[in-house]
Length: 323
Length: 308
Image (cartoon, rainbow over all chains, first blue to last red; front, side, top):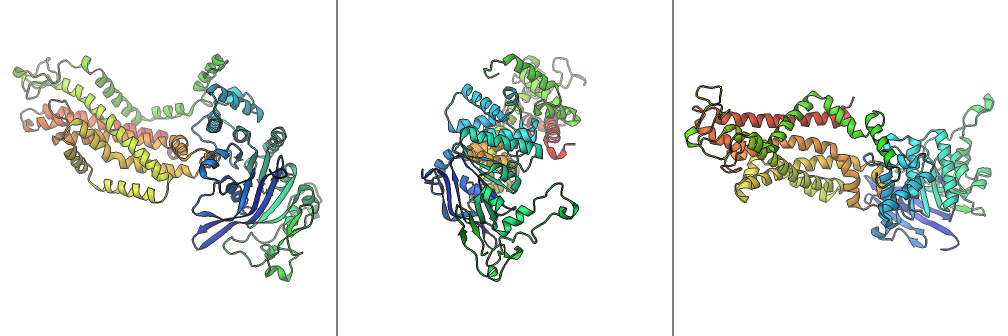
């Protein structure tokens, strides 16, 4: 492995064939995750966050999807070139995924214990008893009380937070190197959200796994991630370590996002929530030049004609902007 | 349970779960739902009776169903003039006891239902699941073939298959099984497509499960409800079709006491001895009615859209 890099996405392009053309869901995205690090991937709905994750997992339905270019290097191997049978061994074992909707991500007709056991059974040869012990152990790890009896529950007998814990137990069952969390807390209410995030942080430091954390919630990113990449319309707009990004955001989109976070307890004048005008452009008719210029507050003339390159500001701080 | 040290406490909690309506296995909710449904219960009672009768046939029937009695030909039922308690429902033209033949006939009809629905269910579910999971040319190939099978009149296709295989109860069961495959294939395909979109299927793929495992271990158990309903309704249809084939002389061969065949045998003497034809007809009616009622009741109990 080269200098601790676990996953390196280089110039990834995931497109979809659709009626009337090609949809560029992920366009020239490069990301790096080091061992034991959490990378936050932020962006509005439909900006390509989840498609990036699915591409890493090899779960893009093809057709209509196809990879137009780039590579996804995991432990020195390009996952896009790995045969499907090999990919199945990696999924759930080395890379696992936590989904957004704990309510629907569990199969309703099996007990939660069976479903976690299934993951272990797929990747390791253990006896029934050993498997069951591993499942109970993983349930304890994610803080499910009375693990021995809860593993015989069906999903509908559990709350959303408990189900998300089961999903995390499932993701951790085979001690993966990388966990992809696709908005794991969006469907949960705030207190449970905090618990789950704390749990993930604890587990990460215990297991040394890396996390690719996808969310649209910058507050969550601040708690979780060491590095952050901001995506917009299929492209990375700004990437930096979390501290730099929050303290010194350079891209107008990032600034816009940060200033749209509501602040509790300010006086009336300041209380009005600032927003970014306009809507995300349709991926069918992307604007010429900078993808963001139509909504940009500081846009210049050249923004409408020339697409800005990613500029390196030093220390890994990258910005796609003319200014 | 499963070799855990706290086996006894688990047993208790299992019992507690069964009795506590908040926390018990969903299976019991559905049983309760079915038992609250009057038509479903009526069907269940009728079918249970038939099942009981066919299991206990040797004990219940007063005579050997295929034994001829030359002196007792065409005796009327007991309540008619000339009837005797020896043959409660009379005898047919060979002096065979009608009641015993009807009782053994239940056995034949139920076996036939199980086998032909079994054939249709296994092959139909497999084809439907494969078609629903692999959208594209394979789906098209399978389902268009199913459409062709469905385009033939039911009984006509069965006649063709039996004509090819040769007449007999076994071949009739196979033929009825084959003509019912498309029904199951369609239903299973529709539910698989429905389930395919759900997150837990993506989750199953994300943990590295193979396609076959995803179809049959993850998706298929979620499609069971419509399959159970169709199987119950299919039972009635299968019995009816088999009776039709036997009536035409292509199904059960004499002296097998099959209801359809009995109707055919009694046809010639309907004016002289109405009972030879009527009782098997009533038996068919009740059996088919029972399965249809049960099927309707199951649909009401299992279909989440009809849930209150």
